[in-house]
Image 1 (tube, helix red, strand yellow):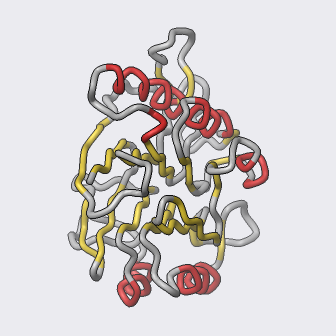
Image 2 (cartoon, one colour; image 1 turned 60 degrees about the vertical axis):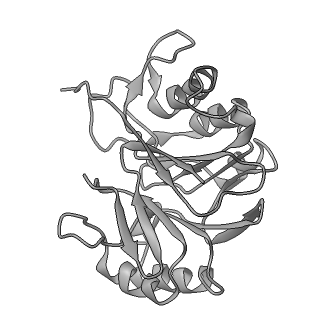
Image 3 (cartoon, one colour; image 1 turned 135 degrees about the vertical axis):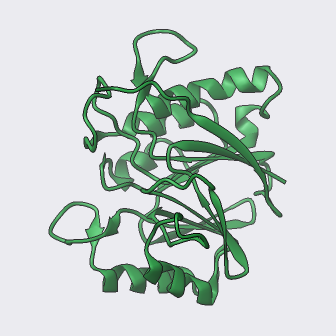
Length: 241
């Protein structure tokens, strides 16, 4: 049965933002539907969040969309009635909504339930990119990302552990400012679940900020080497300087 829940929106302070951005909006695992402030029928939650950026800017809660960068950690699909867990489907419309809102940059990775390609996303604009083993620089900040999870490579958006770790090592040499993952490392607390092998690998060359989801943390922040992990599963986190 569908459940009505409130999407958490939190604010965190970071050391540095990309030049031209007054805030970064990070989100993942938006596996639900919601009404847009623009009206109409319920739509994918990520689309509604993108539509709310303008409302929040008009209220003074956020800067204008052209001063906002967006970071997505995947799993943006929901069954139309939000009545089936773990549904997979097309999520390009979520990416389109953030691009259409006028956000200065939209970078992200695909989750294991997303149906979207890097080619489709690249057509939305020069600063809109689905990352999977890629690094991008925007406003003096380097962002890297790996889509999918560790698992059977015969299934979509899955890699062997060996292949995933090799890609981590490649992307973090030299270190990056932001690493986007769908499946992330464990945190500092027992309840901050994830992949321990990802934590041990990343600690050697820790990004300033690792964003991930896939499993939910009640406490979204954990230290990782000289940097931090922020879990954005089923939440929106606004990063400001």
